Length: 625
Image (cartoon, rainbow, N blue to C red; front, side):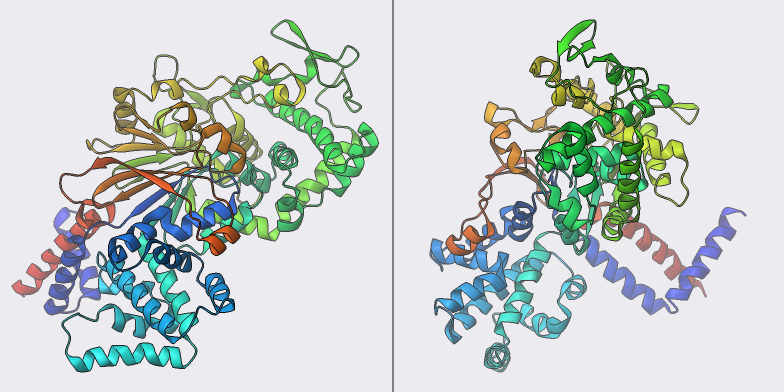
């Protein structure tokens, strides 16, 4: 087919949607208006690690943006206390109104003032969107009413002002003000963030990753860049037994049995009983942990021996244990172990499971593969997630792009070929997706464990020393060698090399990373390589707060540029409701665009400009008829 005939065919398809020249003109005007609006606000969050309450609060306060807008509008009108009260109301409207009502602080005047404040705030936040987009965001039950109130003008005639006042009074008189406030609060939060990026590691450490995913499943616009802890759970749901045992070990270690048993219906009772019987440990959790660790290292050994291409023979440590002496030989040195109790270990065949261990693994396997709620959540991770994302001139991924000591893209042998750079991340994603289909290839399912813990895995990029951390007292053996990527990403030219590999040559392009906690308490800076790279893992979960000195970062990318917010630890929802405590967020402007960024400068805007060009061709075609 020649070019002209292809254009004619395309124009015919366009005519099916735009049957007249006037309809084409209207759409060109509409799209031209959209691309000249300010760019929507993007939020980047990473390494949430099951910390639901803190995550919920960050979602509710939009990383401090709500408070900023409230202060902007009402600083000269409301006291600091009243502004804090208004913010908490927006974050938790139903709960806050219950408390205010119990203390007799709600009356008609309160409703009137509060509704007016919320409408003013919603007006400000909706100003960067088309009226059509705002309408789509409106809660269905109040869409018409809110639309009317949002577009009321200060200079309207008396009749119109009276009409809007009567709308609010009628809502109050009908005892519907509470629900209307809840709807307005939801709209405000919806308008404050146009798109959310979760840069990996929703799971592990904290115990409520399931609640976080439930929350994200109802979020209006987001993408997820898989983290190694996410891929671990995904591998478990795919039926990788080593991933299953790692998931169980992690949650036993951090005291998160509830997410397994209550949230996902995975019974640990057989494992506990087996551990108590075999290891002589009375505490069920500790007994289960002792048993699952040995099963885990056996299964990992089987995978390493089956896949020499993983290059992980140094992780074959069970075969170097001397149970009699209670030592393990590492790099020619005999190292004392914390325990010499290995009742199921056959020194002649150390990676073989006992009959009882096989039975336990089979039961756990069935629970992970068939669990309905777990697989609903895993499917969501597949649907919304990927190994990396190129979005509005930024490259987003959780871990690394593996390189060698010279900073050259390192190669990995997969499916009979060598891959590096972008192609490596692409083939890793391809295999991860293939592992979740019906009757998957065993090699693809096995690969999920490598993605979790392989030194050359883009999601891990370090030697994971689980064995040493579990069994050796000397912490010198715990140090995990990282891929050279993590030492070289301070260099601007190195980061530019990676950006170019992914097709990004814009001077304002950045790499946005998670995975490695930034120790702000020690003066470590999340901004690297002359503002080419941001590491936004600030230790969201409580277990990391003391180590990092903060409680996470949010990177905000709006029409004016980039801002990085460092958060203080969250106390509790109860404290927020009773005392209006908030997650305080220190904001640092990283990059301020000289020219404000508009929709036309975004990925969507570029597509809209192509659509406009096509519509103009169609309009010319109509005019030639």
